[in-house]
Image 1 (cartoon, rainbow, N blue to C red):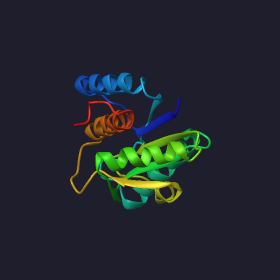
Image 2: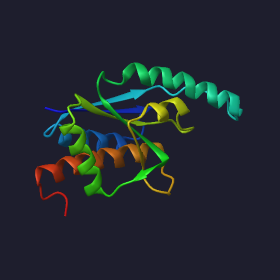
Image 3: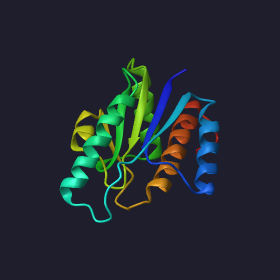
Length: 160
């Protein structure tokens, strides 16, 4: 079974987000070996300077790099990434599965984004579109799209 890991900065706090995440994790388990890693965001002052933000993102990058599964294809979510339809995303994931990679790893950065070296290390940069979403909602959207991609590949009626 193919391994999919979603790495996120920060923990879900609201019950409705936690419930939605649990539901999609359960659904995904029917298609792949799924892991969700919630990493702690670096604490920054109330109004951090650009240097403080950069230092925080670098610290988070070290932690992220230590958690990416060995041999996994890495996709990061970033505004400057490529926009894909659900069908194209499913196709990209199928392509990764056929490439011989041991798994796929997806990363959602903190509220300040991610260090440039994380983006540089990524095999693919994906955008959720030009709109801005709260990070907790973005996580649920990514989980849903991962589930949808697996359902499309399986020929399920979930995707209409």
